[in-house]
Length: 299
Length: 153
Ligand SMILES: Cc1cc2nc3c(=O)[nH]c(=O)nc-3n(C[C@H](O)[C@H](O)[C@H](O)COP(=O)(O)OP(=O)(O)OC[C@H]3O[C@@H](n4cnc5c(N)ncnc54)[C@H](O)[C@@H]3O)c2cc1C
Ligand code: FES
Ligand code: FES
Image 1 (tube, rainbow over the protein chains, first blue to last red):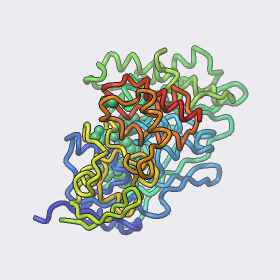
Image 2 (image 1 turned 60 degrees about the vertical axis):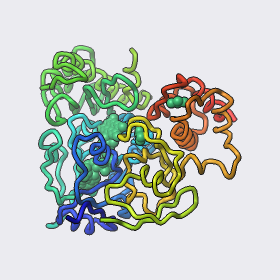
Image 3 (image 1 turned 90 degrees about the horizontal axis):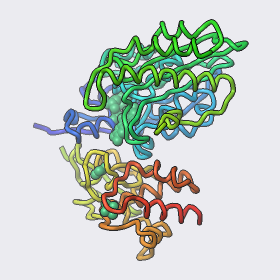
Image 4 (image 1 turned 180 degrees about the vertical axis):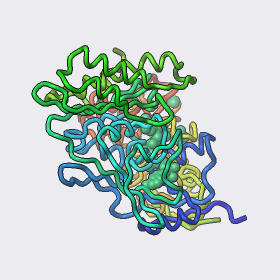
């Protein structure tokens, strides 16, 4: 037996070739390597380090939208002025991933590709309409995040497809976004329940709304009923409550050591309401603290 | 399979031979011979193993040695030149930020990274910033005071 192997990819093509030969990519390692040490899953026998591939760590603007390389870290996202200013829900999410060591190494590609129903960047990116570009042996393709996740820890992408970039379209004027999670502590935590909202206001009314729930179903997903309940009038208490109730009604939570089914359901309403209200406040130009989740702490 | 890599720790290049799965922490402790960095949990919970890699704080227990090939690694031994202490190290001693000392190497690395990113953190920002580092002895107050003291200059 040859034992475990490791190579460092110096290009996307290199990485894809190694993956096609059976190697698993490792970026920051904060999920793959940590999971192995916790005994969740052994480290794959064949590994390919993708952390040195040039050009994958940039945050670029295109037509008012953003292009994030797969290797962009949570720290880079949280400190980026455009992410904070116009894609604030993503900054809310990246700001609460792990500790500062997790954020300095953990990448957006690794977060999305772990397909966890509790990952923090998933819900805001889904609401923002983000797509991912995947490179495989047969070429490149672009798919929506809703298409990417197939179940807890399961992707529709095949094992030899490398996530190259995340593309977020430009938000319409008057748009605000937020991501909020229920957490028992402010750092080193995983969402017990989470919700994201992207709200566009025009003339005092909600013109468009996107609402997604985290850690409440096998995959993070949007809730069309909640979105419909919010659109078409002012974001008053009745509308916000109806939308939050619809978001919670779509939840299919599991019960585990961190929270029971009943508690997750009850908190789904609260998190959805907070996400919507924060997004509305930001859409109307109010400056709300990042991460939005901190305001849920201890209150 | 064994891989020949070069770990540059505290400015010195160490050629070492490692398995694909070897952690940076074990390699630095057992092969490089620098045992300042500690192993508490070995799964990224406690921060006792924290090192700086190209300036980034990293839990080295959960980082592949192979991925650190060619990078600039700083461990607690490399924070201060020679036998001097950095202002942060002195403040830890003066403020009672050290008791058994097991968490201290990781705390110092973590606080160094925190201060580099945010030179004037509030006490709350210090607590949040150091929340990946567990201390069983001090109750954290001395540590927060020490970091505040350096932040105020
Ligand atoms: C202490 C701790 C706390 C954490 N807290 C949180 C938290 O609060 N919220 C949260 O969402 N996550 C959390 N995480 C999980 C993890 O840190 C994040 O998901 C991080 O973004 C993973 O990125 P990475 O680069 O380290 O991934 P890696 O570990 O390198 O990879 C993760 C997975 O994605 C695959 N992969 C990586 N990059 C690509 C790519 N470009 N294309 C294809 N596949 C790829 C890998 O093969 C692997 O299966 C935490 C982890 C730790 C250790
Ligand atoms: S030993 Fe590395 S985090 Fe605990
Ligand atoms: S001083 Fe003993 S663990 Fe911190």
